[in-house]
Amino acid sequence: MTYDEFLKNFYIILKRAMEFSLKARREGILALDEVLEEEKVDNRDIFEYGMRFAIDGTETDIIEKILSNIINQEKDNFSRTLKNIQKEAVLSIQRGDNTRVLLALINSHRYSVK
Image (cartoon, rainbow, N blue to C red; front, side, top):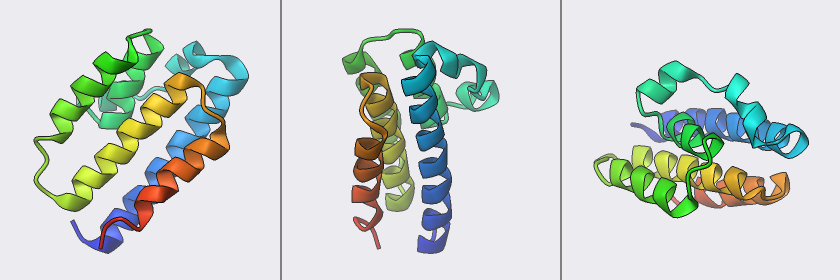
């Protein structure tokens, strides 16, 4: 993956995570079930797959372990960073963090690769 592809995917993840965070804070985490993309869940997309567990009420440490095991198989540094961002977004949304905190958390990774 190139840096430009990383940035493109970064912004897609950022937008999706912010949408989920706002919806969860306004309507509750169960409301996310209606916007979850099941095809991505089935393909183990880190964000959607992780959100399925969060919506189902799975404990944080279990979600983190499952997602970390998947991420550890990733060889490309850009892809690994994106997946770690997705994992952190899932855990932040599950905790009910303020959306500004989630934004700061995600943006803290933006400059960690090049």
